[in-house]
Image 1: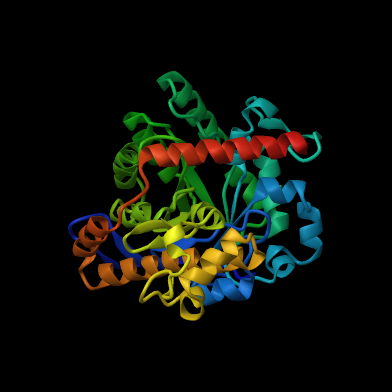
Image 2: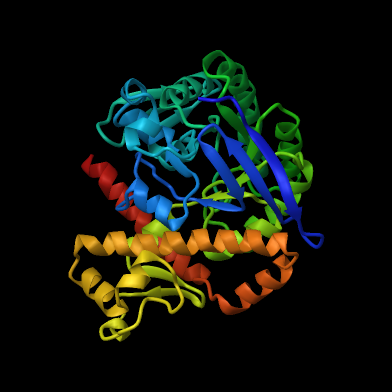
Length: 397
């Protein structure tokens, strides 16, 4: 692996914090803004690496927590790292697993040293420390890695938010030291926390921004708060971070989030949402998310969306995609996922072009006028459904 990491800003919007950049990594160049498909367990569900490249994916995200439990980071290391193991030769970012450990609240215990948790797979106990996470991520071998952090819940009392933020900062200092002992050539992004307290968000960004990280990830958002609150928190973070380094908004990736987040200074996004909603029949269009399961698509002869250049829309009718989902055929999951990923990656490319040509504000306003996002009530219902499904899987495991 080469040690070359370089981020350059190609264009900026004078009326917002939007910028287009180029991030050079050992496994390839990333043009930002960019959406990263999530391959939690060394695969983006239902699609191959070749199909990821075809939809325009430049970098994918995988998860340290899940890979540590199965198949194990040492096994991945024997294959030469995650790139070889999963047959993906582009850049990879690995999340530390802090969010996953947080989401297993009843299965974990926190202390100053780290977190001890009970595996949702087999009930075995594991301890993650800042140092251990760096060791695991060194074995996995991603280009960009994240340190162990604490994701505070929403809502969160100010004193709890400060405690979690300060402990995260101490863990990140330890991670920086350990990373140099392991694989200095990996790029370590610092994580900004602070829950939903403006002063804490600014403080965290200043402190983490002063440390020698290659880039920065903003964590602890999209955990149940209203979108307006999430966007407001970014307004306190962006001005405090070094302009010359890339910024990653962790776990956020609906179409409107991408459009708004870019204007608030974010360069990189990741989220399971596009692939997850696709599996349940939710497909993105320029006007908003549709349910391909709806009866009106039973005889629809055209594609999911006219003008869409994805493989699914170029080759299949909406009626056929509707039929596959209704019949619970495996092919549906591939075709639906391809459509949503292509939508997100095309959107990121259009945002980049709009910034470079000086048209970001007009593009943002036109997109948001046309695109009708799911309501807060619908999103909350979906979150509760997915949480219930996750709890059921944990109980079975």
